[in-house]
Length: 524
Image 1 (cartoon, rainbow, N blue to C red):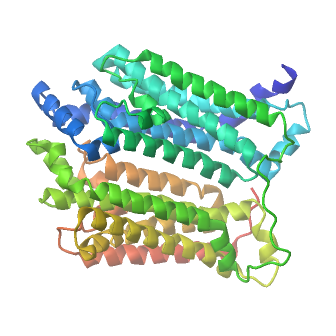
Image 2: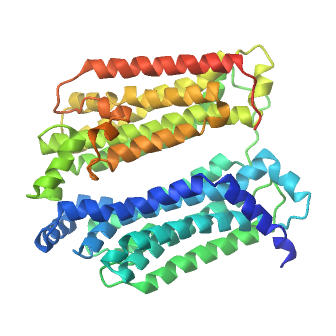
Image 3: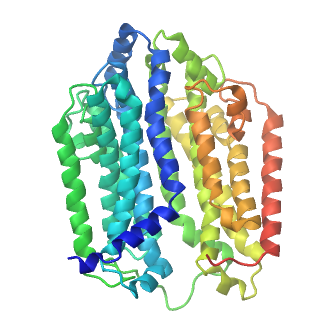
């Protein structure tokens, strides 16, 4: 057994060094999200009566249960676990799947693992080191959550921390299995993300139908297990054993599979392409590479719009008579009408999420370059700008498409005229394109720093979604381009910031493409 794990320590140190920024940032954001909820919810619901009232109204609202789950306890810690626990578990799962696949299938796909395996490296050492890196991430998250909520009760804080970290490890193990099944890191990430999406959907459907959290659908989901630990509400410690068992069983499956294949091989064979190529242009190739991602985002935004649109009428239940909660929604939404404020908040959230798609789509071209697949194309009669334009059309046009689908879903579910809601969704585009333009600039002018575009998009998401609840100053909120957009529907249209951000996005793209033309190609 020791022979197959030879080199695990060295590979683990290498993985932690490579992720020395990613792991701390994800851990701080995920754990800090939960810890910061104490102050924000204490300001909103300062008395026991207010907390009991909001707990009762949220549990009675099926739309709210589908999004956050039922409220099991009306203490401050119980409300924090309800409001932030599910999303913290999802964030931990996303970070875990990224870490595991990066250090397993992606290493094999790029050929680096084959080079390492030529030395004194055991067959299962790469998988073990990836899971240990994920364990370090989730342990840090659990510690931050526990420390941040310890003042509300040590047992509840520990239970919530273990539930969030344990969910992350379950999906780390899912990612480990997916990495054995596929030949592509993108497909492995897609399969794991689909499993996470299915888990969230099962939990949402189960909680929408059953206020107690005891639906069979909820118990089919690892995300549902995390909420049923019931932190700060008579903890069910035995549910943590269910989470641990699932993580260990999936890990065992991954270990068995990795011992039965060669480096670079997979159990799901890639379908061979046609004898003659069908891609006649760089744009067609970009579409072929990114169509699956665009389809997934499109379906997600449409379904998200349908879900959130059905919650608009219940927005008043979220705040009740609490003026401070009403002010937060209005600050996020930008106007006094609560329904309009809720809609404006949702379209702003969709805009910030669309920025993640746009940045990822731009950086897909950067990935093609660093993987060495762009160089053979550009060695022929294909200019760099024409090659890059194919990917940029997907990034900028695709973001417009998914925002339009989100607006369509909101309008259909809420029963409101399509025009105002669709316009409110599309007005987010200048801010989305600004962040995409920043990604183009970094890719073109400073390719080694291109991934910093993810940090900019994540910062804007944090400022827009959490900033108002934490009562951050307006100067901090204005760091995000989304903070300058008119808050529609309900507010008057303001063309000046829209046109200014559009011009800024165009300038960033132009500068980035100019840098791409002048520099050498990168291969790492």
